[in-house]
Length: 167
Image (cartoon, rainbow, N blue to C red):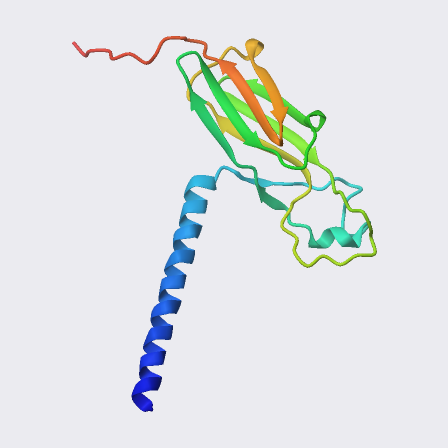
């Protein structure tokens, strides 16, 4: 009986250790890959918990996942903006920095309900993305479809990178 209990304890310890390793790997990957995607949302003056107590439970941080792709001619940035309208977003390019800002509005059908899970953040935000090359900002185009903002930025120097020998 005692041996059976010891074996169960070892097995349980092993399973807990494995679960902890999986959780740690997930957090490391999220922080490594998504560190820039973690975005702070700021509530407006009319959206304070004092004026609307329900807002106290809403998170202030959320992930706005994105990707930056480079082709021979352009930089393509895709940014996930679920629950937003294209009219709520502004895009600015300054040198090789892309700024995407906007506001995500609270959509609550009833104030007579109780939330059991709350993972979505609301309010205004700004996401800063360093571009790998300078771009022609005046020729940039943006589209929004299915919650994904796609920004196409023609490269200022259409050449691929080139090797420069040292003499």
